[in-house]
Amino acid sequence: MSLIDKFLSRSRLRSARQRLADDSSPRNYLALAQEHARSGDMAEVQRVCEEALALHPGHGELTRLHERARALVNEERTRALTRELREAPRPGLYRELAELFLSMGRVERADEVALEWFENCGDGAAQLLRAQARYQRFLVDRRREDGRLVLELCQAAAKLLPRDERPLRLELELCSAIGAWRDARRLVSQLLEQSPGDSVLESRFRTLNAMADSAPSVDAALREVERSGKLVSEERNARRSAAPTRSIRPLLKELAGGPGVQAAIFERGATALVQGPKGATAERTARAVREIVAKSRSTSRRLGAGVPQSIELEGEFGSVLIAPDDAGSAALWTTRATLTAAQRAALAELVGASAEIVDESDAPSAQEEAA
Image 1 (cartoon, one colour):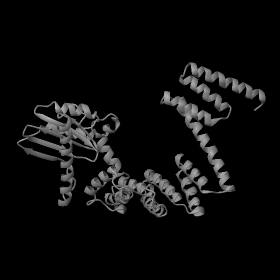
Image 2 (image 1 turned 90 degrees about the vertical axis):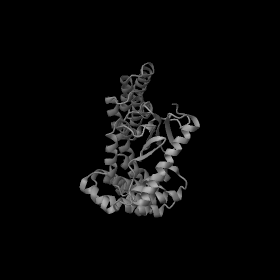
Image 3 (image 1 turned 180 degrees about the horizontal axis):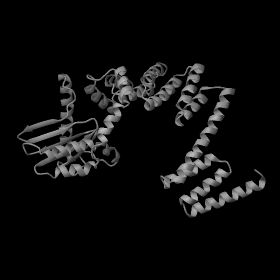
Image 4 (image 1 turned 45 degrees about the vertical axis):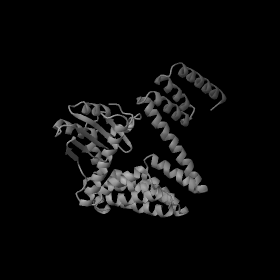
């Protein structure tokens, strides 16, 4: 680029920036990005497009330009890394190149680079990255051999990286996806040895413990996925997404407003939403429901009865119906001897909508939820 061209380019960039400062419209963002593209600065094109899409999400032209700029930046970086590796290979370059190929969806090239990395350096991280690449391919093709290789590579990486949780977590992700609950439980147990007292892992272990007895082996689970082309995790998510997804609080308030209702409760992890009781009474009520669910699951396991689908209590206090689920438990206490079909359906809807609670950043504790 000649001196005059550089001067004109800088002048156009200043003008484009000023127009954008006056009016942050998609058209002015596009004009600035295109000026950077003319000067060959694709990294800056990518940055401008990211800024623009944060303000104007889903804009077609900005999205296309951003994807094109990102692809060009990645291609340029892969060429530079490949040249450096030919001249003076080292683990950091192998890692960056393999991760870059993986982020671009070029799974085969990522696997090839990671294999070369392992052969030259013997790093456990290389085996882990190979496992990640193979797992991506397994998710697409659902081939049993890919799944088996993921497990082998995770186990090899775990031996070389004894204090690193990532190989165990990737193996756990695969076992959970295919429904190999017994092996998933073993992996959670190993993770708990590294992170004792982790409440999320402990909760997951209890859930898996209830599912493990009737679970298939890893090989049988992989064969079934290869045959059907469906992951167990996808089927579970499909069942949940088929349920209504109304927000938790309105459903609770609707339930609590019924005749004779003393309390409507939803629990997920350490969070409890309670309609009816207030203050310390709400806390005790939520804790009692949590303990009933835990003891019922424990008793069901000892009896070999599987996972409880519902828990119903009757007495002078009326009726309590609890719908336990991995995603959260819903309970309704009423002074009536029996619950209506509509109330039972509403409890099932609460459990089906339970994914919504993770989006409620201001979800209160049991003490804070008002009647």
